[in-house]
Image 1 (spheres, helix red, strand yellow):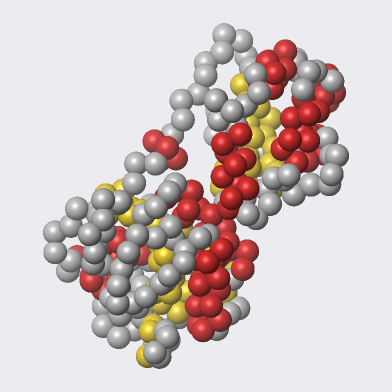
Image 2 (cartoon, one colour):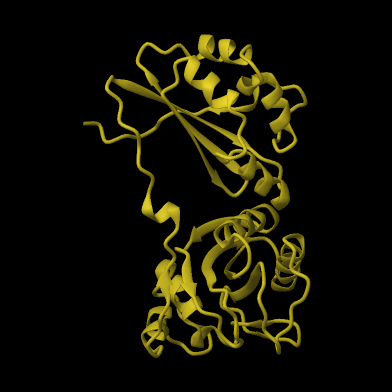
Length: 289
């Protein structure tokens, strides 16, 4: 196993979603993702574009050698819709994946250069990598990531103001409540995931779905997404009975049809009920007040 730092960038489409999907793809195809930086926003560098970039750096523990890792990065770029990549002409792109460091290896090959030859010049690399590995030493320059970052000229890089960073306002209820949490995996397909998100938007979701959820006594239901994994929070009154409520929900108008409508996106057996697809989660920590 080897530790590798990967730089990610996107300046087309839903940039935050592009980065998250790429991270999940890297996890699936190359190894464990041990650390993920915040997302940073920068203007295009090396070419002119009205589209700002979102960038991040991740640390991966991989079995792949540097050249196989590079090939996997290129496959992921192609899967996500990138059509061209050159080192001489820069352009807008839906995703850009670069190996920045691979252990302490120094590689100077026509197709692959490690450390990345321009990483010490780039704010969109040094800000995120310093966040997750400030004391990491550059194998050629023999200085830390933090020291390289401090040598940069003045920059306009900013933390991306994502919804995730801002947090989400929770509803307040006039009665005591309890919470259920469950998870479900989607198929590993960026286009399907984008469509799944669209169908859950306020303009797309069938009106019978939230109406049925409320009818069985659920006060609030929220779904969050990380890569291909969904996380659902369900808030209910204290006397709410989970199994009885979801049995009733399944018989309400259009609920079974909705489950079938969503099944194309989900890693589940055909015809599976909501209870069979979603897996309840066990709480292992709270503030114990």
